[in-house]
Length: 505
Picture (tube, rainbow, N blue to C red):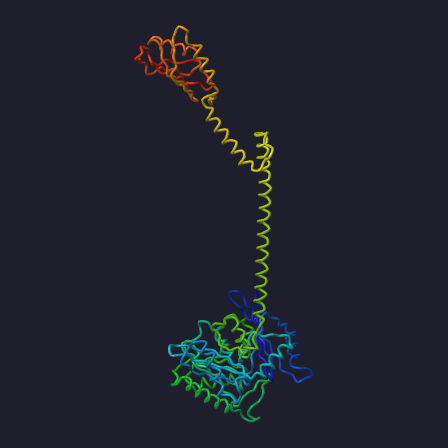
């Protein structure tokens, strides 16, 4: 969802605003708005509130800047790069530059560049009372800014609009007629900047106001300003400037047109106005207004690309911005609530599955009890149907093993078999049985008879009964007592007998 960023510049003379609309991938400039501060009944907060309502300047994120005359700042080099040491050292570096203690100011800093030997730092401070008044003004207008920056510094961020057209080494000049910002870039890194304050303006005869309220400076004063700019650049560079050095000018009012022409005529720099270059994401109708809104637009662009932007934020310590933390807490609370809901739903789903399984288990146990009751009707108490059934099966298998000789699995009984054998052998054929073993599949008999012929007769008679599946006579031999020993193997049929038999000599 697109987010709107509102950047404000408030000073004693004018209210200015720039609005950007940002998306996940890109942004676009929506509009620029301004109106002079009027000395009428009511407070500045009421005028600011009306200004916001008239232009419908509602936004997701609000940014604001302090005018340069309320902020003190300087750049210096420190021989270390550690963030913790910078936090401890930077305020004391500034303390000697102001006539009040650190407990009366709010300090922030921006690292311009780092190298192996240390880092170059831009540090700024504002008196607590001035910051409190600014926040009170915005609060009375219904605003809670995420960032409070230094107005002259924010203008540097408009250079990102040039994209790949931005030179490697160049000079940037911006600000207002009362406070000109001069910056030197090398390898697209800010190496130094300075604000020229209280420029020598001529008298009333030499300084006039244009129709739109902008100051028009006399030619002699513009020439003096050009000299100041040249000496400032020499100091920042530490050496003469390269010939043909690009110079980009983005200042407010016709005074900067005068300054642009004077610099182009008296220096070796290639001077051009920022709004004369191709600019990204700025609609063409707004390009002409860009120099007048360089501060507010640069402040808004800081929110688009915070890692690449230049700036400070005086919302530190007790003045810290809490809406982001509140939103984070609310987001965490919502996430926690959703997580709890997911856990509750998962538990409810698990309980429902448990109930379904318990219901199915109850049905299965009922069926098991049914089968148990039909199988073992004499058992009145059922504690564990499965275990009780298994016990009964084991006991039955033991009984079957014990009774296998009397009741083999094929249905024939020992009495039936003995009756069949006895009925098949004629009384004239003697038969003495020494051993009789009945197995589930066969009957094995060890016996004696009078002769070999008698053994054949016994075999043939048993075959003729058609009771046995097979009849075999084995190990026929004479015994010491004059009789014939032999073994009979009588195979039992599946139904307790057979329809015929075969003889095996």
